[in-house]
View (cartoon, one colour):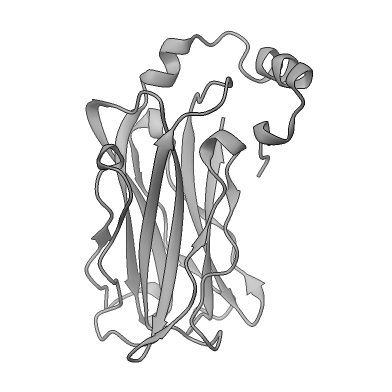
Length: 208
């Protein structure tokens, strides 16, 4: 997926890039995107059954938040995961910047670090691997949603989210949500190459 690294541009290049990347757009388009919250759901049996409860962050307009822990139905070694870009029609994002993150846990108290994508204003991108303290078959995950005022001269036209499952260093094909301008929604389930006990996830934030 192509990323637009707005933050890495010089001042002159940023002006040229804004004309090139966002030609035909107006500032109103940046405010027409809806607010949202982010959810995660896990399943077992290769993603065919034993779905756990979907867990959500708060709405982005309420500032930094994180979801409750999500697991599959038995809370042990999930096989599949999806991410949910849950938009709120009529409630506008305006000039908020955001990034998404996640943390993994295994057993009781074996936490990994929180890993984030870059900010939307910086072009988004993929997070580092989200896993537990030994990098092996976490049981549960929770999501983080951080916000700040939009710091860039560039215009956010649209965005979507993705999730990949990773096993033995091999990532799955990313499972991608619909675009925010299309109302967002749930991604398909992501499963690793053998659809069994993945070691971690990678989150993605794709911006236009």
